[in-house]
Length: 86
Image 1 (cartoon, rainbow, N blue to C red):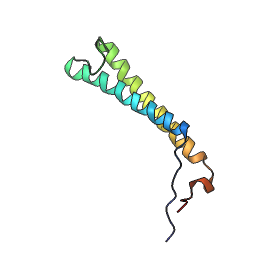
Image 2 (image 1 turned 120 degrees about the vertical axis):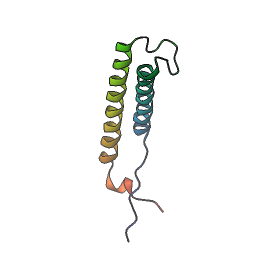
Image 3 (image 1 turned 90 degrees about the vertical axis):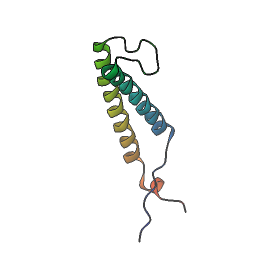
């Protein structure tokens, strides 16, 4: 039975992952404002309902962009780099 391939985490993939986390936080901040009218972490962000809607949309867009970048980077890795060294 062949061993499953392991993907290498490069600095670029790590940066995309951090952007994905930032998108989740922006999304959660906007969703918290829409659900309860309270801010999540940063005081006065978002400060209004339109700002909350924009942060939800921006958070989703940032997450989709980051995940697409991660997938692009992992697919672009040569096959010999994906092999498990053990």
